Image 1 (cartoon, helix red, strand yellow):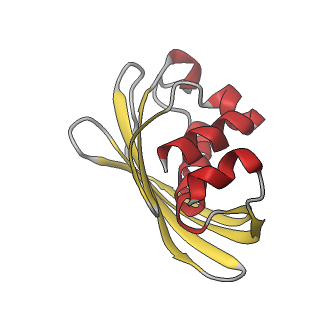
Image 2 (cartoon, rainbow, N blue to C red; image 1 turned 90 degrees about the vertical axis):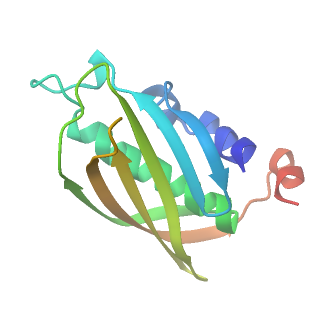
Image 3 (cartoon, rainbow, N blue to C red; image 1 turned 180 degrees about the horizontal axis):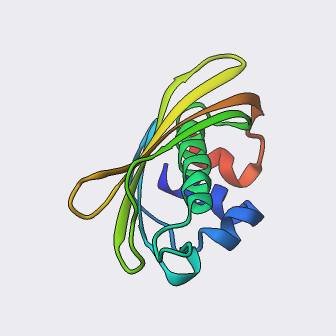
Length: 144
């Protein structure tokens, strides 16, 4: 699952550019856990993680969780995000993406972001329209 997620992130141009310091720390089918240190380039005027980065993390981390479970690409149809607390520059955050349900045409996922103390900073929900199964030969071996 880690190799599949790493491969997905490396092929996604936007994710590669904006999430180069995102690290996978644990992965199982349907759940992927990441760590990230908030950098100055990730911050808003208040020197905390920018809300746009939080939204991108929900999108990417929940997408990787869906991919790890159902091995299909998807297109975002809806995201809902609640920002509960800021993450200061220089602090580590933990992101947990979870595939809650994957059907024939839709997948539902959630994403939670925590600070080093375990406080919930952000929670998101993400719905995707599911495309065709992966057919990339490089990934086929990883799916068996």
